[in-house]
Image (cartoon, rainbow, N blue to C red):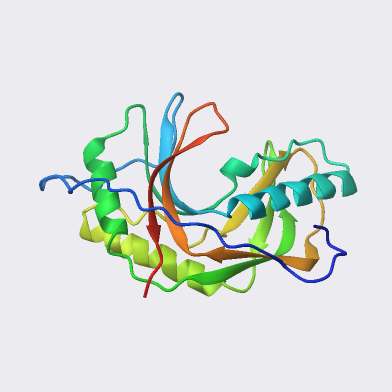
Length: 217
C-alpha cells in the first residue's frame, strides 16, 4: 500500500466478547491515575485494525520510513491502535476497576462505522517524534464512541478518561526527524466493529487484551 496506489485499503475484523464478571460493590472513588510511572502498566480502551489490515499498515509505515529517510522502527502490527478512553496506570491490576470498566463497556450502544486515515503527520515532541496517521471521515463517530464510553464509565463512578483537546491518531513509529503533513493519495479505511480494553505492559511492545465488545445499535 502506498500513497500512489489507487483505491482504499479495507478489511473487516472479527469479534470476540469476554466476560469480565459482575461489577464490585459500591465505594470506588473516581480517582484513577492515567499518568504512567516507572514500572507501571496502563489500561485503556482502543479500536484496532484487523490482522490483515494491521500488516498492511506496517508495510505502509516501512514504505514511508524509506521515503522520508526516517530512522525509527515501525511499531509491530499487534500494537497498532487508536486510543479512546484511559482507565489508569497500575503496578498491580485492580480487579474492581477492571470489572467496572467492563460493566461500563457492556452498556455502550453504537452502530459500527468506517474510520478513514487520510493524512500522515509528524507530531512535535521534545524527544521522539511520533509519526502518525490522522483521521478524516469517521472522526465524528470515533469522537461519539469515546464520549459514549466516557458517559458509561461515569455511571460506574470512574473518570471518563479522555481529553477533548487530544487528536485521535494511530502511531506508526517514533523518530527524531520531522516532515510536513502529507495527504494520502490512497486513504486507509479501517472498519470499526468493536472496541477493546487493553493493558499496555511496561517495557514491552505488547498489549494484553482484557475485554472486547461489539458495536451494535
